[in-house]
Length: 77
Image (cartoon, rainbow, N blue to C red; front, side):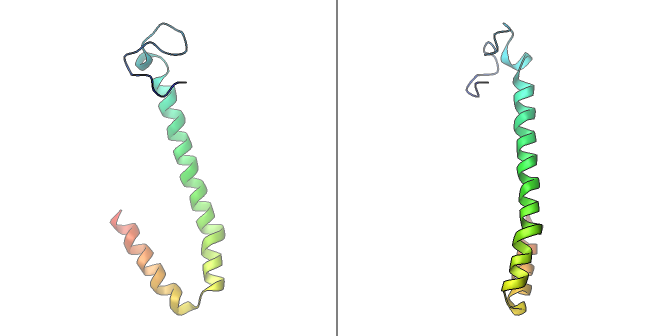
């Protein structure tokens, strides 16, 4: 699928339909799925690797301020 195809151009799949009436939705759903999967993997990395590493290797007096800072940033978004 050519991501440079305009909505009103002929679909690159060769159907003869406009891209917006043919393959555009499938392309959008694929990219949306990829984004959700990436976010899910980022969560797993944080939960299973980064947080345990920080808890094990940093002094507790450093972890608490970092955690509070992180939570403040998350609340803003």
